[in-house]
Image (cartoon, rainbow over all chains, first blue to last red; front, side, top):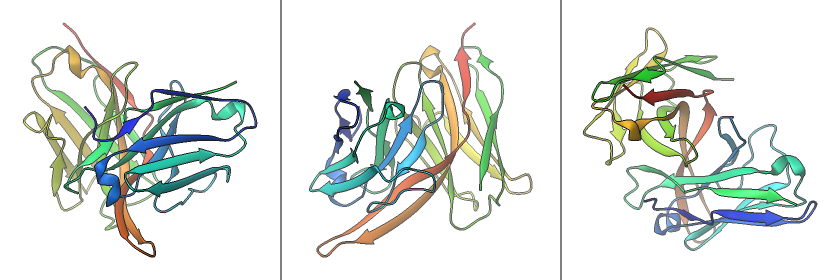
Length: 108
Length: 130
């Protein structure tokens, strides 16, 4: 079982805004990073740190955090954003790395 | 920018040892900025962190796999490797290697640390079957 909990599936209408959440006690002390994974491909880092996007990641992707919950927001979702999204962070001890179970995003 | 490439057998027999190597290009594995990690993904399932290593050889592992995992580094070849012993069908997965960074920031009220994997290999499917 993961120390980070994600909703298994979320849907959004094309062009609308969607928030994908990640919950865990460790997020009170450690930030979540976010990855996008499309079928048959390796994960791609989309958000890390406070709200940092690697080069090439569109600015419609943003991250935030409150208490034990981190969120990935896609503002104006596009068809190409349909993918699985994973959060990751450290565990509560700070010594290990954990991933959330993943959220499948469907763009309608 | 970094590029990582996994290599190793795609088929391993039950009870044997899975061995994979990750070759890093576009940068030095001896960089003080990075740890180097292994992550796996069983078919149709989520990502699972296996363990990570620093160029000095310092390692840390997922407790659920720790008794069977060894990660090592060869700085002369710019490579790091994974060995997973006594494999079963449950170890069938796509295995990824990735570069791992740590960092932190402070808000007006709190400071946060964290970890992220910024560059990933393409992944290699390892099937455990007789």
